[in-house]
Image (tube, rainbow, N blue to C red; front, side, top):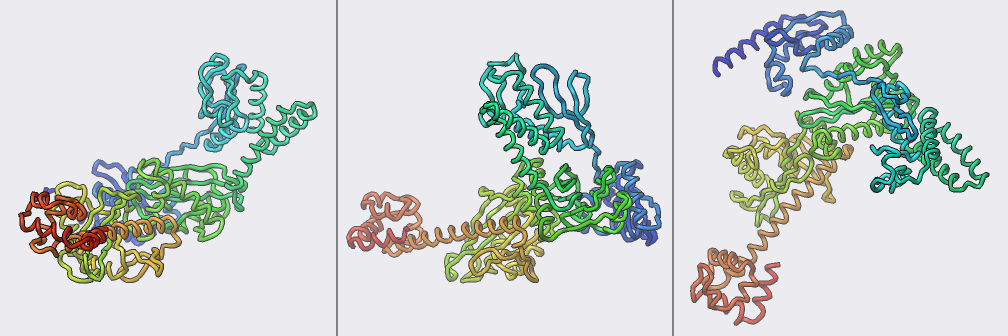
Amino acid sequence: MAASTEEKEARIRRLREKAMKLPLSPGVYIMHAKNGDIIYIGKAKALKNRVSQYFGSEKNHSAKVRKMVSNVEDFEYILTDSEFEALILESSLIKQHMPKYNILLKDDKGYSYIRVTQGPWPRISEAKKVLDDGAKYIGPYLSAWTIRETVEEARRIFLLPSCSRRFPEDFGKGRPCLNYFIKQCCAPCRGHVTEEEYNESVQEALEFIRGGTGDSIRTLTEKMNEAAENMEFERAAGLRDRIAAIQRLNEKQKVMANRVPEQDVFAFVAGEEKVSAQVFRFTAGRLSDRESFLLSTDADDADVRAEFLARYYAIRDRVPPAVTLDGPVTEPEPLVEWLSQKAGRRVHLSVPQKGEQKQLVEMCRSNAAEALAQAMGRNTGRETSALDELRKLLNLSKTPACIESYDISNLAGGENVAGMVVFENGRPLKSAYRRFKIKTVEGQDDYGSMREVIRRRFEEYRAAEKPEGFGRLPDLILLDGGKGHVAAVRPLLREMGIDVPVYGMVKDDRHRTRAIAEDGGEIAISANRAAFTLVSSLQDEVHRFAISYHRQQRGKRAVSSTLTSIPGIGEARARALLTHFKTLRAVGEADEETLRAAPGMNAPAAKAVYRYFHENGDENAAAAQNNEK
């Protein structure tokens, strides 16, 4: 192992010395593994500065970069005249070599078709390719998402089946499916729809797909008026319902429209291991396509955006004049120049702060969070979005999947206790909650109490043999308190060698969460709705948990003091009586013989307890009952 460490250190020194000799010029660097394979390609404004960073301190690297650097045996470089040329060359080389540590996007935007089976009862569906199966294919279309949505809407509006039953073979076999009962299918399986009526619905659906909503509404309106004139009122009512369904679809599409005729909207949400990227593509002011990607990267947010945009548009022919993002990109100038050259016109990158464009970004981001949540199978999109917002807000190196929160509770320094709650993937993990009695701090000293709790918790971590319970390090610690609590705890964690981010949760005058506290100030969180809701839930939960434990301990102390006020009953006998009888009321209702038989009791003690509850009237019994409440 020692030889391996020495070899690693020698390799890093050699690579760093080579990097320090590079010029301060723009260019592309190419990292090679021991077998000669290209494992990473990057660009730089100043090659010396950028490449030498890889072979400096590991503390400044993400896990992915550390892994990549551990596999680098050598590197080469190509000088360019500008950073813009470096970007173009980088993009070309990545497409050619597909290095494993670059963000790689597969161009899966193949054509899609609408498939219409032939025969007396035709079916409409989406298809990825044209087959020699006798069916009729309409297309090709570029957007698979648009075709899928269009086919589903056509089926719903014109009540066409989406099941696998065959007609007329399956007439009368089994009950209709749910779609019939929610009025989304005419259920030809029941045999109540004629072949002529069914085929007419299919033709109307195809006209809707080919001509759009406007043509369909005009055609159906003419048919409805004709049916009404012929007193075919049932048919006219059915056509009226289809027109209404198409009009509802129009209203739905207006929600997904914006004032910019052509633009792409990008949003990114990071999880523990993956980053979800979502793209909304708008044409003629309406959402025309959407794409979802799951990336294996833990680079900085700005780096992820820049690299993703370069890879995305490298495999796309269309570049819109407006590209809207949920955050900044690193070195945007060469990227904008490259996109503008590819589009043949000026392309603008923007990060909106308010208004319609901000709402579009948030909608795109919600979809990215939902896609990540489904891919990971752990939580909902809302929780995923909240954790990612919190990560960005606090500038954490990774998404805080496990958060521990602490609160101190006492009454004028009495019954000093603490509560610890754990949220995993944005949800309470109640099996991991813990309670602490403060042992070393006298009086009302919240800072000292918090230090004791944190020290005890991480001493348990050091002693643990398995990575569960106290043997697991949290990704984030949130203290119920301000910067004073943070300042009291951070030095202790450094002293113990525990590297976990610590922040405070600050309340306003109405005891509502207002901000997150640091050593030197506060971070406002009200503008980050999802993160604000998560932190508020954490603060409310840890306060509830701590104060309930404090009330429980205060009640126990009151009950215990009632018994110790009886001659001959000390702390040990009081605890034994409560353990045996469970409640103070049960002790008071017991006869002298039953009391004498209890653990730790003798005849004089039993007589004293009996007299206290039975020979001094109802006053002591009432007081005991009040203490127990």
